[in-house]
Image (cartoon, rainbow, N blue to C red):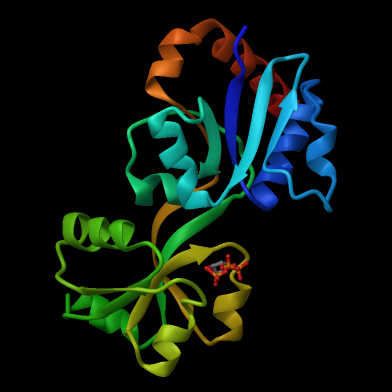
Length: 213
Ligand code: PRP
């Protein structure tokens, strides 16, 4: 039997994913060693391999089949637009993709003004403003600390992830519009889904049972 390979999003999502696997009776002790610099981990019993990658790279590994399956945020799935199957909502990593800004920006949105939108998610922002809102905007790509943009005058609004809302609150910003709800999802390579249908189906049934507990 060949190994089924999993690409996990480094950080909190990977930790929570491994917890779910563990509850399904699939453990990977060597992955828990925080001092380890190893990149790939094996569970011999179930013939599974796991590796950690940056979120936006997970869909890339899965589309090309370097990983049969992956766990990644819905935000990254939407932003990367890769060809793969989304098969399971893991129910953790829950948050929302929102248009945020100072209260004063509400009017600019209402009047469909030509505003600047700073974001780490240019494709999601483009789709929302162009295809859903039919509003022409200027998208400015940033790589982090997006909340800074309206404060220092780089943009009028931002498109960003809101979890607890405390980052917005502490910076005097608000949710102006909600774009989509997000959470961690399991994704599968399209060829793997056909070639390993039985194993993947069984694994998904196991995981779903654990998630329903
Ligand atoms: C994310 C997001 C917000 C914050 C939202 O940033 O971009 O800034 O978390 O969380 P909250 O609603 O609970 O405050 P992250 O910490 O991932 O880092 P980044 O700013 O580098 O994107």
